[in-house]
Amino acid sequence: MTSQFPEARPRRLRRNASLRSLFQETEFSLNDLVLPIFVEEEIDDFVPIKSMPGVMRIPESKLAGEIERYARAGIKSVMTFGVSHHLDSNGSDTWNDNGLVSRMSRIAKDAVPEMIVMSDTCFCEYTDHGHCGVLHGHEVDNDQTLINLGKQAVAAARAGADVIAPSAAMDGQVQAIRRALDAAGFTQIPIMAYSTKFASALYGPFREAGGSALKGDRKSYQMNPMNRREAVRESLMDEQEGADAIMVKPAGAYLDIIRDIREVSRLPLSAYQVSGEYAMIKFGAQAGAIDEDRVVRESLGAIKRAGADLIFTYFAMDLALAGI
Image (cartoon, rainbow, N blue to C red):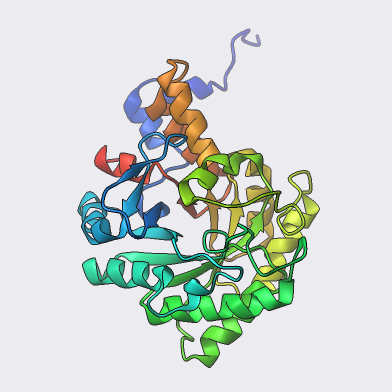
């Protein structure tokens, strides 16, 4: 006689905390997280970012102490973003050996030599128009920007950056940077390419954090959020150009893209939980609508489950202090 009750009972493995932990498929640790930081020159104290509760611009004079604090908490890697007071039409401060890009890497590596410092390689925070490259009329000049990206990457490498992370979304940027680094003798420096970067509405708080002067948008060079096949193509192109690791940005709304790329590439794959994703969780928690800690862990777990090896997140320090 056939039983009317199920023989297969997945609930058997969920019966208590120990069983749930034993059979959990996806985990993440501090080894998987990179903390993005904002460093502002010529200020004396931390500046709160209103649209990103808990995140502050770090005075350059206090960067070394912050890097030491992160290291004590267990953070293994940071991504540096500069808030410059020396803007021009080309972002030329970025390839100055004593400019803010170089100083951030130098200070961080001097403070904690074992900290992995990733240098965001772009121009949006260093140009007076806020675009990610050289502007001719209303268009960004792709190929002139490639030349300047190479110069910025070499300056960052000279200053001690461990990883160059181009985010300008220019065609051919990985190849141009690889050639510039190799010609300067930095053949050992890897490139973490922002290979699939969408023109997302979720970057809003970042604009405040970085002091962006942008008028208009970046839709002519960042990706259409509605395009899935093109997203895979972009990352595969960067892989062919010599990227050592690739990235999807943003993360949470693009889990399908993370999975698509994971299935066709064997490179290390990262995903960036961007400022808008962070802000939604923070403000939702402040309103009492969600449990912040649980949602943070669930969201990062989903990114990891989709196939990301590394996750860039502003929650990294919170998790480190909580013992993850």
